[in-house]
Image (cartoon, rainbow, N blue to C red; front, side, top):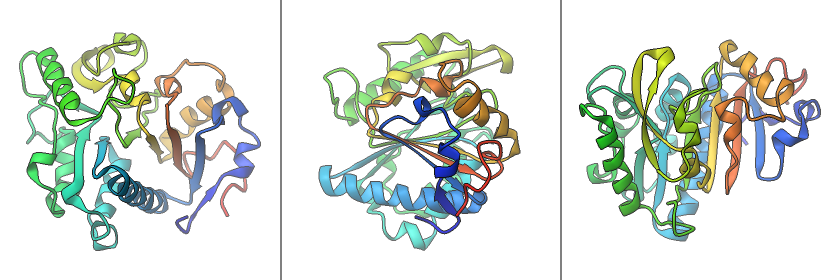
Length: 271
């Protein structure tokens, strides 16, 4: 475990147990830096495990400020030199309706923070085309890529080794926002969705695909996440009110919070 993080036993004692059933874990870290280092170590370990067992590591990246710091750490020699990048396949959990060189592009953020700094073959970076006029076509194309690259664990849904997710103050993950029709998707792997509150279209992986991952890591940092974290773990823990609460993975779900985001869970959670 990275210094500055702890398995939050004192916090767990206050959390509704239904929110931390088998296969789920929670770490609370001192700050964003400690969180990012802990997540980078876990990413590196999972990459080694997947490559050792199956010959490749298939990971879906997230957008946002918290994942960006993780990517910056992964680009440093401490972590980058421990990953066999020639065996890594990079995917994206969602993308905005912008070209890849747009400042709002999730691909561009990941490229600048991580991908341009490590020796990963370009053919193993599978980005979502957010620039196409009809994003439903882009979603169909990306689903085809996923089915070609990933092994289907159950004959229907392919399986990522790891899906990285941030969480918004409204409880959204990837581009799965509250009260959007994509939340009810049961068969498609990727879908275009209009997010009315943002007046824009997005492309996102769907819940059945995300939930089929071997590992999911949710990263949350900052005081603007305090309220949603309390809702998810305490006040509304037994419901599926927020999209993040629809994460019921086939594999493991790991939460990484900084002290600010976890402030209302419990005092004394940090070692």
